[in-house]
Length: 72
Image 1: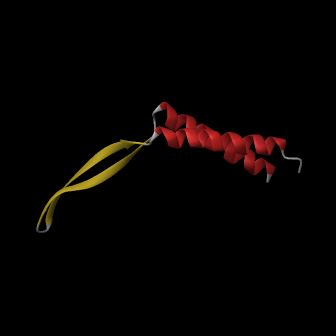
Image 2: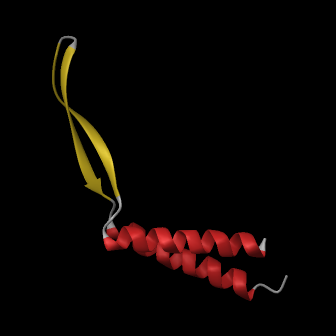
């Protein structure tokens, strides 16, 4: 369990830093127009909010420190 906490904490910490630096994004597809069976769609790149990265850093840090300080 201790090693699991450390690994998960470090992964969350790294992902949080990656998102906070500004590299995290996802694609969102919207339907612009639809006429019968034909439709026009647009795909946009959306940035992951910075607060998600900060939360990942905090939670990952807490889990990693908890894993290191665990007595079992």
